[in-house]
Length: 138
Ligand SMILES: Nc1ncnc2c1ncn2[C@@H]1O[C@H](COP(=O)(O)OP(=O)(O)OP(=O)(O)O)[C@@H](O)[C@H]1O
Ligand SMILES: [Mg+2]
Image: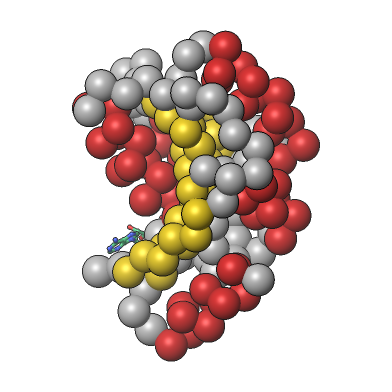
C-alpha cells in the first residue's frame, strides 16, 4: 500500500470550491490513481467534482473518456490554462476540483500547488520514494 503526506497551502482560494492538487516528481508514485479514486468518492458523497488532468500522458482524461458517467467531469489541460479552467469550474458551481500532475515537471507542479487548498504527495513505503517527497515538497 502507499503512504501519503500532505501539505496545506492557501494562496489563491476560490470561495465555496476546494482544490486538491496531487503531486510527485517521481513517476508511478500513484498520483493518477489517487486522483480518480478521490474524485469518485467525492462524487458518490454528493459533491460536484471536477478533475483537471495536467499530464500530457492524459491517463486521468482517458479514464474519464472510458466512463459513461458525467461525474466526475474530467478536463485535459496545460498548466498555463489552469486559472481559466478553475474559473470555469467555479462558474459551474463545482464543490471540489482535483488536479492530476505529471512527474518531472516542476513548473506544472508549482502551478498546481499554488492554486491548491490542499496538496497531496502519494508515496510508496521505500527509501527512494521518501527521497522524492523531499524533492517534491521543495
Ligand atoms: N495505493 C496503491 N496501491 C497499490 N498500487 C497502486 C496504488 N496506487 C497506484 N498503484 C499502481 O501503481 C502504478 C502507478 O500508478 P499511477 O499511474 O497512479 O501513478 P502516477 O504517479 O500517476 O504515474 P505517472 O507519474 O506516470 O503519471 C499503477 O500500476 C497503479 O495501479
Ligand atoms: Mg499519472
